[in-house]
Length: 220
Image (cartoon, rainbow, N blue to C red; front, side):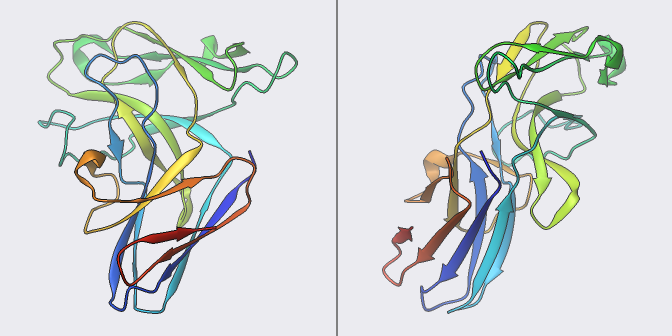
């Protein structure tokens, strides 16, 4: 998929705060997969803001100190590495190994073991080893993308608690815009939202989203 620019127009007749987040990933992770807020902005009435979602992905990881993953927890990237998604028999995806450090709490990448041999369609492969399920460090790994406001910063868009197994991660094709006060990296439960705007970026380079006065959305 190409990079996609999302233009948000505020026609709600009041200044509003908006948050962008990705659809839930289909990853077989114990405890589930969590959705942090990708980025936020404040748009005055009749104003407009734009986000560009890149066609580049990263494995991200970190810890949440004393907090377990769940609504209200904020995740920040401690480390990351770029990955390539499988695009056919002649373009395999990245296969990486992430180490949990047992009880030391230090997640690391086994760069010597990294290779490009993931054959699962539209995915990349992550092998997790040396993770202690009883670790007090609340470790997490996930999928990241560059911050739309700062391309040098890699931020998580989906996270989960790792165990010693193999994960195949397929990047999302849908993103959502919601109105509300959230922080970038804050995990929340999308089921608590009313009607966010759904954006399918498949094959698109530009999507226009208008927040209307009656609270509904127009997506073109």
